Image (spheres, rainbow, N blue to C red):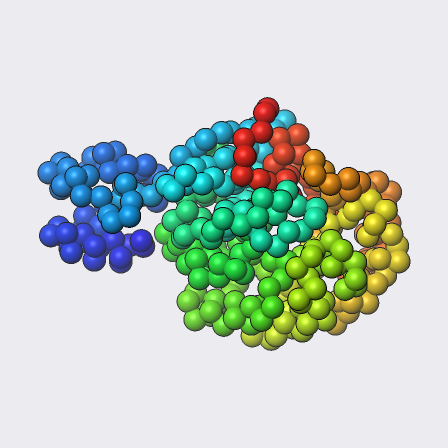
Length: 345
């Protein structure tokens, strides 16, 4: 709940509205994990609430339990969190000078089955609720002792299969935690007919769509894309790009394209040339991601020379491009390595 909702709820419980404001402060500023910790509330009211938990839950706050923590040499911290119904998700805190990025999950598992991604190997359990998404940011803040500056929906799951909760979480992150939309990125591999819906709902719910949309291409043609992303057979790459154009027209925001480089498979100069032709006409940016190994696949990480050549070919064709550094690789916390199990450190 946001501030207005908490004020209304407090009044419904027979308390003055300012009790809702106090609760809001303890939830979002202090990160309370239980009502027992909210000592500013009247003891009798707390005891009453604790004796009558909400229907279908064991507590009022809804925080996840930390099941395991892995810290990489570069400080990247991966948390395995337990949900109230006994499932688990992973979230990652990525520190850098002057910033802390939280990579959040939007689902328990993922149905998209991208071959290069560990998350899809376990299938989908369910989508996450708003509080389970926001809680990941609170958990990283708590563990790393620093206020997150950026959030990327690039963890477990396909955000566009959980649009309502994702947009509500963005609203909460901005309104209740003080983040700016421009500090948030939503990544998708593509779900038919959802990008225009995302744009329209973002404008309706948030008033504007200033977060970054990152579309995962990973191949410059349909045949190779289907080889890497089996679900892509239902969403031809040209249809995906048409929907991207509609998204740009509705929001006025550029699209960022993500491209995982797999050694010897999609990282050659002719692939770069084809990619440049494919996205010609877009006010866009390409984010190159060297493949991060997972145990179920034998894909190879591209050589530094191949990454450099691919980047140079795009630049020569006036495509804005950057290369994402692999963070947390030694803790299986890098892009594509998240899964719902505890790994040995």
